[in-house]
Length: 205
Image (tube, rainbow, N blue to C red):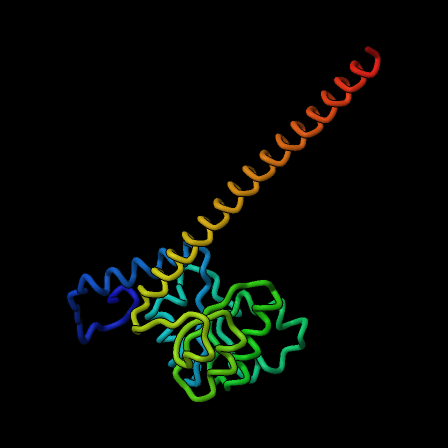
């Protein structure tokens, strides 16, 4: 700090609990698994940036140009611009409920699977448009019973496991059924030909 002509007037540190460390590891792992986390908030852009950085949604070691926009800016994009920029946007500040719904609709048009969380009275419409999660149970496909981010990672892990198992089961069933059908068809054709030849021999005799 002194080398940057700054004067240090305070220094602080804190112990990180195992739970916080697990949270950070889950955050990193879920992003490595291809999950893109977006935050849509009514807070001003400075507060939104600070919270998103603290949560790991924004990172200084990545190109964050265009990652933070305000709701009115996002709303005023043309449909084509919105579709191009929506993947890179990580934080929408000063947003309205309509911005959340607009974001979900854009991502669904790009064939993304979405999970949306919300705690406001205006969130059910967005939850219905998405593919799952919390708050309005009748509006959701999946309900998370706690507010722990690790639960999202657990749901993702189990969901992918179940999906992969279903794929393997269908592949196995198709393979077995096709093989059985081919064998039965060949057997039926062979038996039919053998019967015809036997009748022909009897007729000749």
